[in-house]
Image 1 (tube, one colour):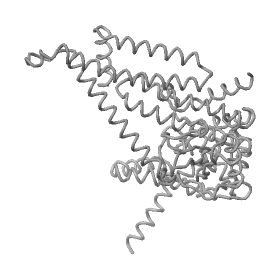
Image 2: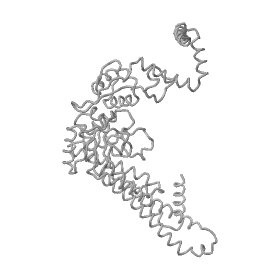
Image 3: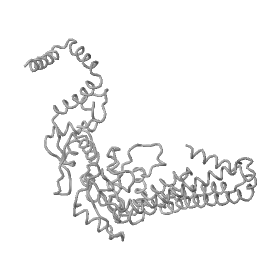
Image 4: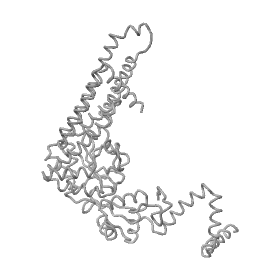
Length: 143
Length: 314
């Protein structure tokens, strides 16, 4: 996955992708099977009217960012069948891995202190998740 | 910036100075611009005027060097011999001579480089960033052959580019014309529209646009110190695009499918062009919406569609 830009003030997929890219990627996850540009445009248009050329270009960009894969089919005129390269879970993990990894590398002490402070601040579930993985780490360290 | 400054100095000094040449060049510019606007719908005529302006500018700079050398030699030589001081005219003359020499040498080098080297390498070497898929689909090959036959030109090579972005372009590679189109173009346009895009490319070959563009670019390089040439060269490129649209519409019997192809391409959000800037492409989506359209080599798609619609009405 190659993320090019982060948009700190936008939420969800749009945090790392453009508007159309987000819509297209989400729809691709929902569709769940390899699909051609023309068929896919028919589905996307139900939500938001877009031209086939726009869908083709957007899918090409997602392909270049490593988020979707495609195969060339020659029967019935050359065309691609697109499919997502990762699940939504994997994508979300990859984004956090990318961002946090960079933060931990560049601003290690501040990032760790920030996390400790933020996560401790009155959210029991988060605390539980954290202490669980801390325990796991400790156990691994002691053996 | 320096060049513009030199040019301004040149312009101002000659206008207030004794030379009639600057007045002459201003006159040429004015006549050329007027003719270009008057020939708004004749793209062939427009190209001729623009190339003519470049020609006159070239002749004028050579003439100026000649005349000023002559004057320098005649009237001012004794002052130099005496070694008194530099005078205004001699400095100007030397600067202009240098500029013309540099421009000439650069244009010759560029001409040799493009003519001898760049056109002898294959497509994949010319565009290392693009993947070419062999062979091109049969029906596309057939369409290209038919259109080439109609246009009366030798049938070019056809190759398929591995890219989802809709695009098509033509290059002179390996001493043969090659038309390339992307998978994205085939999958998002219907057969009629693909035919229209191919007809546009064939029209570039038919109209000899490679030669025209080559000449305009060489003249721009030779006239590198004259700002006007930076506007004329892209204007030539744009005029050829409009002309290719018109020829294409004639080849396929009406502008309708070309209009619909261009409209679809316009719809696709301004996106990274799959092909580099420097070639002839039917739909090299013109990335940014620049304020400096006048410097763009690719005309606005909206303008092209409007021109075709006018042609339909006429």
